[in-house]
Amino acid sequence: DLEIVKSFDGVEADLWEHFDNFEKEAAKRGMHIDLAASGITGSIEKIHTPGMVGICNHKVDTPNHVMIDIDFWNSASESAREMIIFHELGHCYLHRGHNDTAHSDGTCSSIMRSGMGGCVDFYTNSNRGGLLNELFVEAQN
Figure 1 (cartoon, rainbow, N blue to C red):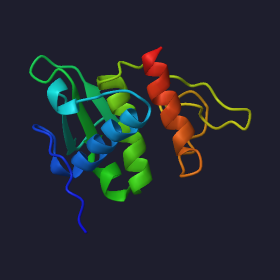
Figure 2 (tube, rainbow, N blue to C red; figure 1 turned 135 degrees about the vertical axis):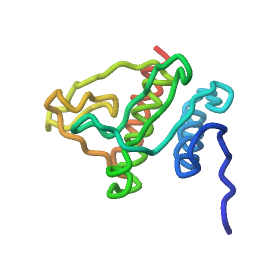
Figure 3 (cartoon, helix red, strand yellow; figure 1 turned 90 degrees about the horizontal axis):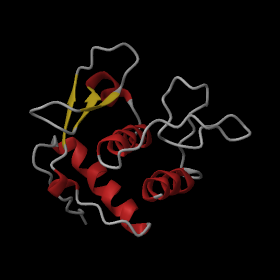
Figure 4 (cartoon, helix red, strand yellow; figure 1 turned 90 degrees about the vertical axis):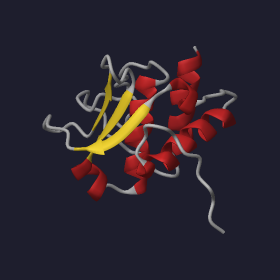
């Protein structure tokens, strides 16, 4: 029972499932997103900036291009992959900036955290819904 994942032009096939899930999670929250129509592209390649695992590039030839570092990709869990892709799509599609707000326990309240702000990443099945609510709801405000 193989689920057919939507394809996205200009996006590396390994990223399609996460692009598709981004649209589905937005739809669950009443937000219609069409990444293919938006022209956002994506690739998995070497990012040469130390510590950087994802980038939303704004270049003339690729106005919104999500790049995920190949070394990160090859070692990351599916959950970590999703979080980074959703974070970069938060920049590229939702035009969200960074948000380093932390919960009282020190965990990040947003997947739009900068990674420099001192909050601790904690992206699990138990808090994924809340983090995705924050991602899409804040984008609509």
